Picture 1 (cartoon, rainbow, N blue to C red):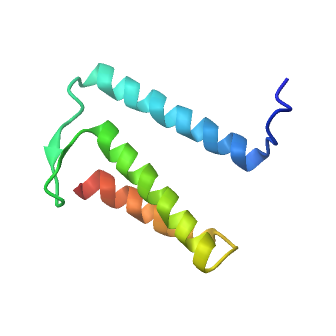
Picture 2 (cartoon, rainbow, N blue to C red):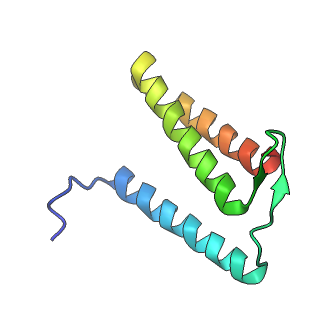
Length: 92
């Protein structure tokens, strides 16, 4: 049934984490409507969803740049992406 894509455990865990994060954002939106808008260091007024999108987009660029310049292993860009995500949710 799922043979159209080469599913691996890392791929499955990525999608599970992504959907769990979206579920968490839905629960937070139900609990505290309005998206918790605030103005950050970039001068943008962002909500939780905006900050998630910026962090995921930035993480993708970090991984692609690392793969293009350095190659594997991917532990260092993972650490950079986690730091970028934390920065986005705290300061953006």
